[in-house]
Length: 280
Image 1 (cartoon, rainbow, N blue to C red):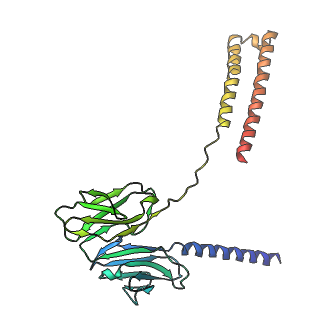
Image 2 (cartoon, helix red, strand yellow; image 1 turned 90 degrees about the vertical axis):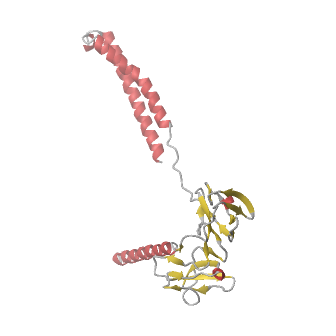
Image 3 (cartoon, rainbow, N blue to C red; image 1 turned 135 degrees about the horizontal axis):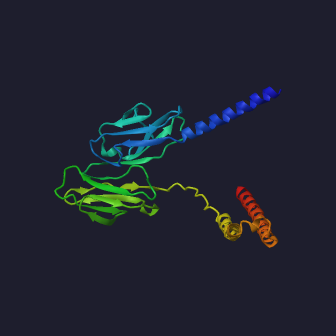
C-alpha cells in the first residue's frame, strides 16, 4: 500500500512538472521580423518567423485592408509553418501580422508593417521599446538625397529637424508612445508607424542591511576596551605585585576581571539575540 502511494505521488509530481514546463514553453512564443523594422519600400522582401520551442504548432496570419486572418503559405507568402517570406511587398500588404497556435487558443504579440508606395520610409523598431531605453529613428529615401536633413513628427506635431536624418529619444517612457513619421524635403513623407513602449520589468530590491547590530557591537567594544587597556598597564607596571604579594593590586585586578567577564557575557547575549532576530 505504502509503495503504491509513493508511486502515485511521484506520478502526480511528474505530471505537474511537465504541465508547468509546457505552460512556460508556450508562453515563450515570439515573432521576429527580418529586416527588423516596421516600414518597407515597395518591392522589398521580408521574412517573419515564429520563435517557438514547443511542439504545439504555430502559423502566421495577418490582417490587411483587404483581408482578415489570412494564412501564410496558402493565401500570401511562402513558409514552412514557423517562418514566412514575402519576396516582393506591395502597399496592399500593409497590415498587422502575428503568430497563432493551430488550435487558435494562443497568439504572439502582433506587429504593424507598412509598405510605402512613395520614396521615403521611417526606420523604426517593429517591436515595443523597453521603458528607459533609447529610441533611434532614421528617415530614409529610396534615392540618396543631396541634403539628408529630415523633419520628425509625432501624432502630427513636429518634434524637431535633424540635419543627419537620424533622431534619438533618450530614456523613453510610456508618454513617448504614438504615431511617428518623417519628411525629407523634395523627396516626400513617410507613412506613419505606431511605436509602443513596454513597461520595464520590476525587480525586488533587497532591503538594506540592519545597522543596529553593528552599532551596538561598536559601542560595546568602546566600553570594554578601557578595561583591557588598564589591565595591561597594571600587568606591565607591577608584574611582581600582580602575582599576589599586594592584596590591593590583586583586588583591583579581580574586579577588572569580573567586569570584563560580565561585559563579555552581556556582549555574547546581545550578539545571540540580535542574530536570532535577524534569522526570524
